[in-house]
Image (cartoon, rainbow, N blue to C red; front, side):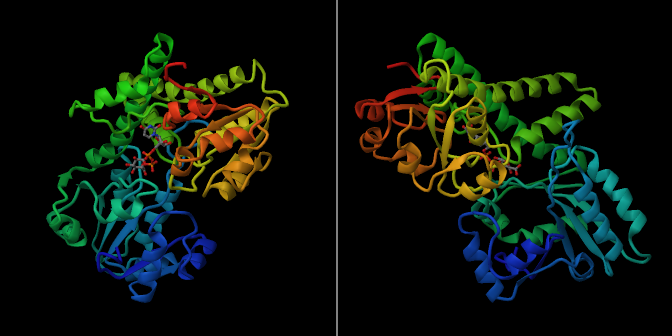
Length: 421
Ligand code: UGA
């Protein structure tokens, strides 16, 4: 928002984060964000506070961007933070304002929040609440934010829409389409987008099992499918499946909400998507056990990758770490290397060993698993790495390694949905 030319206060209850940001330090890895933060601390357009009341009294437009994590037992979205942030704004506004929900919420939430806001704002002040879902990807957050592929505005009056069009004037001038709609549609666009992406991944992963059984190659198949513009090549990479802080929890929350609303077929479709996805972790585990001759007990295993995908240090629901931990539980000695996510991984899984280079992770191993497709793993010197192992066996959990290069370098190469040598 500062880059788009506005004066911004970022408010958070976490003092560590606020202090780090105020000192110019982004508390996670996101390409390009450090530079932007540094730039706008200097332009004085951006500051940070833990004082929500101060931010609520100061701003004209309030974006609610807090998390909606998965509730442990029901898998529904936990709305405590969204409610607390919205309530905090409503109770502390001192002038007419617009509250813009960006968090990913179950359909129906915004309408409820409207009632809460109306009951809490001071007399004489006019506050409107609209929904404007967020579609950025981790690792590409800066580009996705400055150049979004669409802007969805839900439930806005003419005045509120005009205000938001002012906020997004730069991307709109660049041609970003604006979709205006009601509150429930705006809420549902977000979760449906993530559910569709998840379904696409689970589709190709289900087909990868057929490929494997039939001796076909899912990578070539995906390329061929992708040439059909109705299908498209993106999100057809078969492998370990989706993880992270969004796709898994969003499909489960949508499953839960669909069931509540009586849309049982939608819920059962999403259930399958989830099951296929979690099953991929088992398939990779089975490949590793098989490569070790039926048991990984006391075997040395190198795991390349810990983040849920490249270009992030996020390990929330990371399929890579999940597999690494499962191998450890089965008695293997597992050493993990990730170029960015070593520290976050260690904080979540302290019992695993961590290396500081590919070579260190591969040294003396019985099998190597490539579980996050960082570029540096794809271009690694396979011949050199083969020399370091006890036995050069590799499992490509992401379908991105060049099988021929690795086989030519002496590796026993296995992958999901890939033809055997
Ligand atoms: C996802 C969506 O892509 C964003 O549009 C959305 O805004 C965001 O969630 C959110 O709700 O906040 P993100 O979680 O950053 O973004 O990650 P993705 O790039 O979507 O990847 C998700 C997972 O799918 C990763 O684990 C990735 O490895 C996996 N994936 C992706 C595959 O297994 N195969 C593919 O072909 C593509």
